[in-house]
Length: 440
Image (tube, rainbow, N blue to C red):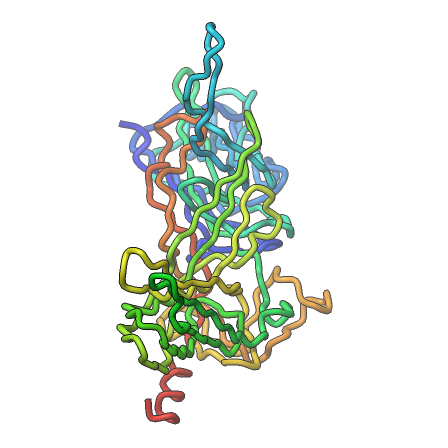
């Protein structure tokens, strides 16, 4: 028997933080029998509820005669908090064989960035002696102040930006016991401070089709949006006008929100990889030749990392609205166009105002502000006194494993599914009022 439970619990029940905030929580250890663990060389009594750079601050030295009457509840346990970004994929290459001929092959390319790493002993030290600790549950608090220039958490098949806490229990003459737990970092993107976010979008695309030696009259698609910037929880209202003067049937007009990710590799050679991921999609059709259509459709914004992945040098992120006119006939090419969209963490206050989250347990105070989010005046003041707080909800993209190269495969928690959580605002009441006003 021995170690019955080993886990990490965060004080923030969302496990979500902003750069500059303090990550804090407890390392939970449950033992069902007395164990000797490498630790300090004196017998000491500690309080469970302490945290200090000096781990001996709350200790009292005891004699061996007193030891039998004490519950000695310390042992060597270290904690590491870090943030990294990694990219990795397989690419084609050609190698020259001994006869001077090129052979097709593959190679793995990758890149790595480390943003910070903090490691320290909660109790004990690496060079201490062995201590017996009492069976039962023990809690050891930890904390770490995050740097202010971190990119947002991000998970994908070809790369990630990831933040973790790992605790290590040092056991003499045995393998160490380790537990690992991820948390989310959200780097704020205030749409009110992004000049292009308030831009109204009005786009037109047109195409003619060849019929024998002649061209058809044009197929013209116009679409518009009131602004370019949105936050998760909002819907993008897209107005579409189609004038199909050609004789070709438009089977459907697709409105697609796409996440465009560019990954960079530096080892063993430089390379880039671009991935297009469909986030949301709606469609309408058909529109026969000579037909006209005028309508509006909405695309809902799910929990997403904010645009750009600022402060990450090996992963770029942007969002596009792709409008595609899918035409019938394999010999005709579809008409399509991309338009840049911003996804932020603070909504445009002059466009729509969210209401407080309806979910029990979320903060509901008006004038929400998050400690650690830099303000435009640098004083940390509340810029938006009427803005309700968001909830934090899981992204659809998750990590397959938390394992890293060089780590044991037996770490507690590395096989747990992890999806970063991003701020989501509640606009349900806004849309209800709009529908009632316009009798939609």
